Each structure stands twice: as C-alpha cells, then as structure tokens.
Length: 346
Image (cartoon, rainbow, N blue to C red; front, side, top):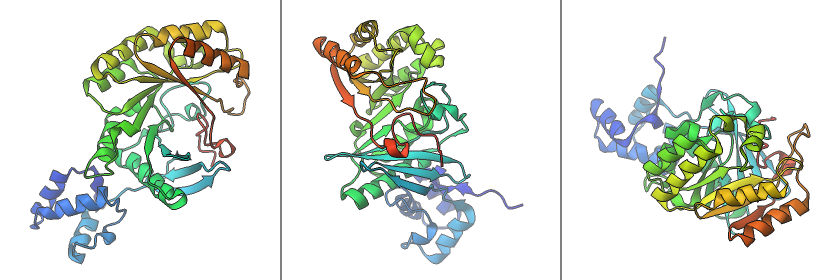
C-alpha cells in the first residue's frame, strides 16, 4: 500500500518551507513552489522550471496537485460560457462566465450539490455530496479568468458565489478561497468585487460580520412573508425571517456595507401588492438594493415567471420608497446556465 499523497495546496507557505528544510533543502524553495501554485496556478510540478529536476521529482514523490479539469465548455448565444468542472474524485460542479460590455463575472460553485432544499432550484435536487476545497473554488476562478482573456480580451472583473451550493454551509473553505483570490500572493482581486450569495443562515451571517469580511453580501430572499418563503424555501422554518433580519441588522452595524436582496417574482406565489409591501418593510432597517431576477424554469412548471405588470409594480413601489432596484434579465438560458439551473445535466 502506498501512502496517500497529500495535496500540496493544502499546505501554507510556512509548511512548504518546513518541508524543504526537513528534506535538507533551502527553505526559500517553499516560497518558489507557493508562487507557482497560487500566482501562476501551476497544475503540475513539471512546469516549475526554476526548480531542479531532482527537486521536482521529490515533490512528485510526496505530493499531488488535485486540480480541476474543465470537462465540457458550452457557449450561449448571448456569450455566456458554462463550464462542467471535473474534480479530482470525478464529481462534477458547474461554473459560469457572464460577459457584459464593461465586465466579466465568474459565477462559482462552493459545494457539490447543495445542503438546502429550495424548491425552485435545480441544484437543490442533488443532495450535497461534499464541500469544495479552497483550491477547487480558486481553480474555477482561474479557469474563467483564462476564458475571459481568451474570448473577450480582458481579465475577469467580478466574482459571485451563486453557483452550486450554499457558501455559508462551507464557511471556512469559502473564506480561505477568498483570501487566496484577494491575496498579493494569489490573484490580487479586490474583495469589493466579490459577492457571496446566501439563502440566509443567520448564525453564519453574524460570523461574517464578526470576521470583518470585506466582500459584499447578497441574500436570496424571494419573499418577506414567512409562510410564503417557507413554501418555496422549506429551511426557512428553521431560520425564520425575524432571525434573518436580526442577523442582517448585526451585519450592517458591524460592516456598514449595503445588503443586496436577490428576488424572483413568480406568478401566483409572490406577485401581489401585499408581497411588495412586506419586502419594502423588510428592507427598511439598512441601506439595501433589490435585484429582481427573471425566473428560469427547471422542467416541471410549478413555478412560472410573473407577468410584466407584477414586475413593474415591484419596481414602482420600491423606487417610491427610496429602495434601489434593478431588473436582471437572465443570461445563458439556452445552455441551462442561468440562475437556479445548474444541475449537471451533462
């Protein structure tokens, strides 16, 4: 039995330096390897050309680099790109590149499947198989940055954690990934260009505030009436809106950072005036912005996109109450890459 080799990217820079010292090598070799792994996103030891063949063989003997592979890339008629990303244990997640004239956004996954049970989302039908490691999240970003440079001639500008999974249920790994993405010894992206989207786990939102994170927070709200929200997002029973609101008030007190609400309007579910009034009331405690998102069907027809009149009513009343609102038209629908559609049909 060969011992299982450790993934070299699980080591800190200090641990890499110690490894080299333990092998009778100079500690600074650890810095070189670290730079190859995180700044240059190396996927094999062979490419680390400033290390001797012997040193590369030694690394090969002790470690692996469990990098992702883009198994399949689909391009939408609107320019959106969806990657089916194969992990080292053969599980697959999806990530999406969304281009506009000014920016390129990466939508990344944080779990294989999802821990939550939102009825309108295809990912929720896959049980959660495991959390993604920080390097697997990082790799998705690198792959999309490369595609952005190749197809759109510009680097990636924004990242949203809105792919598969509930990011706050994989808290430590997501924060480690963000640290690498924003580090000078990583991708050097500004945390202000990163948004973590959560279905609303109050305890973890408070933890984000305590950890003084610098990225933005978006909450998938979809209703500010408990019974309605529970009917579409059953876990709301355990995390009712009063708890969510209290956690978000805490978030705002600590961070002074505006909250974005993601909100889909469905026909016959949340398209009445009472729904709009409840949302306005919910938004009032802190500066916020509402993104009204076009719904993308996932086969069975229980959920239908609301009529334009309902959307217009939301926009009108939110604006009258001084709440910033945008209507988001979905991208990548023809390749099942739009919000709520990620489910590895491949």
